[in-house]
Length: 83
Ligand SMILES: [Zn+2]
Image (tube, rainbow, N blue to C red; front, side, top):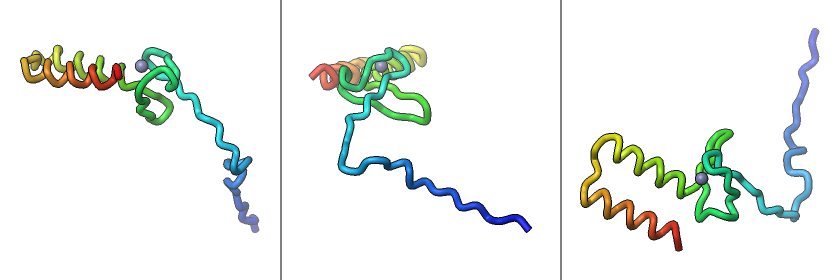
């Protein structure tokens, strides 16, 4: 008979109380989250808010959806991210 092995994941949180600011790098522009307004974290990849805007802009342009309205939204978003 095989014995059941119990795997413990408790070691993940090694030192409690010691919070180190996690530095994440944008997978697209390689900037750390300390240099960008916001970082969106995904499984194995990160994207900063500015790269997100570039991606959105690209999609809008690709689909030919650029309109005065879309431009207004982009301007607004870029304005917010450059605060
Ligand atoms: Zn980026």
